[in-house]
Structures are given as C-alpha cells and as structure tokens.
Length: 222
Image (spheres, rainbow, N blue to C red):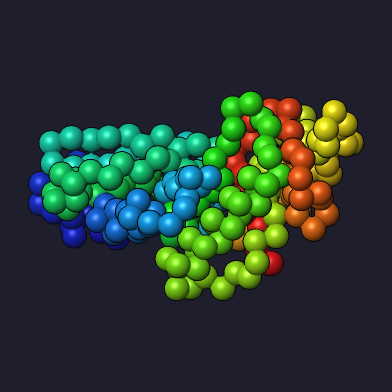
C-alpha cells in the first residue's frame, strides 16, 4: 500500500510504515458483535501474526489514525488487540498503521475462549465453549473447513507457567504434557509453551486447573 493512496488529510500523518483500511477491519470484527447465538464463553480480538516462523512481534506497533486523532492499539504477546468499534473512525475512512511491512504479517479476527482469573475450568464448560466456537466459525466464515472441535489448547509464554492438572473430586492428576508450538494451530513457528487438552482423553466431568493464567485458550479442530 502507498501513502499516496491515503485520504489527503491523513497523508502527512503516516510517513512511515504501511497502512490498511479501518473500515475493512471494522467489517470483519463487527460480525462477532452481531452474532446472535450463544457466545458467552468466547472473545474476539484483532490479531497481527508473523507470516512465517522467522517473523517477530518485538517492537511491533499498531496505530489507528483518524481525523484529528491518533490511538495506539496495544498488542498482547500473541499479537492481539481489543479492536475499537468506532463509528466516527468508520465514517472518516480512518486507517490502521503498522510500523512494519504488511507482507510479513497476517491480519485477521481471532476467536478464543475467555480466561478465568481463578484458573479453574469446568470440563463441561470447556466443551460448551468449544461447541460455541465451532458454531460461530461455521456460521460466519465461508472458508472454514474445520471439522469437530476436539479440545482446547492452553497457551503460555514459558514452560514453568504451563502446569495443568485434571481434578476429580479432591484428586488431582499428574501435570498434562507440555510442548513447544504456535499459539494457534494454523500459525507458523513454535514460540510458546502449549498444553493440549483433548476431550477424548479426559473425563467429561471434573475440572481443569491451571497454576497460572494462560495467554490464551484456543479451540482445537479435527
């Protein structure tokens, strides 16, 4: 994209980096807000992720430039941000500015499962969350070819934080296996510590207990 194609009032504000349409991003993100079926276990972010394993999020900045204002959109360790749905920015044909070449990154909405502050997840709730995520993807994404949601992935920054156990009554299992991998299965790289909790390998009842808060909980499709 080229600064010469910017609205005239914005051309002087984005001399560096590359930009993309706020309206386009808005249209993709507002779908979640308008979705009328159950989604109380889900959350939706706008994500910027490296296109290949060599990319990095270090120093990456995303800014919303609208008429007479500029808003920094902080990115979490997974490259996600809480996307502001602002009618004024939409009407102004605002732009989102990235301080890197867009060709090195993938930009998309990301649905994940809400993280609990107490670290205790009912097994039945995780299954219900997975079903909600699957129903949402099938209803809103024509390109979605995923099959059944078979579990969830807990994503951590470091292995020492990735301690998940299954709880039945007062009995806790040994910690579930930890591996290196991407936060989302369709991403490149293996920069996180992940624990896959698969429904077919665990009791339908009971709890999943996390010793620390994960960065994200991600549906797993098969």
